[in-house]
Length: 402
Ligand code: HSE
Image (cartoon, rainbow, N blue to C red; front, side):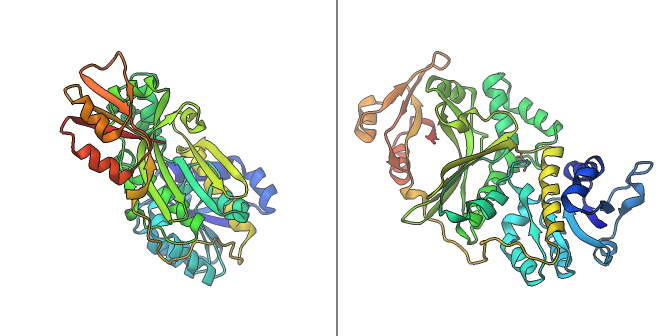
């Protein structure tokens, strides 16, 4: 029999306990063992519930119990999760986590520790909720150099943008609904300011390149400045606005950014709606592959955790491994990143000056917005774009094209 412990009985932790209970027969078939949740660690009490007898408040009870082989952490945050991860691995126990803060910051360190202890540190649920993407990058796309990863990596912001586009909801109503459904982070700034997606693209990029991409180095913009007018212009351009995390591996080096982008309806990422996430990966041999599924939520995320638990059970005392090492990667400055840009200016702007600065631009109009001059530029470097835009006091806003 395999005993697991679950640290944190919140949305995902309770989902993990539920899956172990509901899919016990399947887990037994896949691991050839019966899998039991022996302990649940939480600071709260749950009197009169089915988990009462498993509840503990002291992590030492878990880490010192030789019968616990796999520890699952779904608490989030850096501490005490980092301390628990180190102590668990040092005790030779496999550690499975959905905690992207922990993985983005200490993933490479904890992988090295797991390797030295002949055990595993697994984190499929940290990116893309229920979508298998970490395993494919580590195990399947290993014959390729990864040239690009581009994805909708945050369910809450995708839900908000979808509701604003399809239902005409306000930003605030859509956020409140996402919080009620359990998608949003405890501090929703992490979602709407793009910090959650920033950690996720740093994790994916690090796994692709095999070096540490510090999430703090990833240029990041959230969706708080996106308005109903932007959404109308997007419609006029046959585009959807999506918060994209992008990693690009070029001859000059690697770029990474998170920003709202206009995604043409001809690109599959434009069709990813609601809480769904999707990750596009370009390999030098395989070409383009895409992963799609629920990016947040109790059972989808718990399903990814359980996948790792099964993997951990199948590889007790054998490190599975990734190429991600602690050596820091210095990202390329975005200055030379090339893209088209959609620009909104006050109608009072001198159009001949716009032409002088940006060349021939495509004017964009929508019946829903008046008093503006909006246009799409040709492909230009980020540095050139910023310099030119800053010369126009009439500038209202801009959005990059995917
Ligand atoms: N708040 C995150 C999201 C949860 O909305 O995607 C899953 O990481």
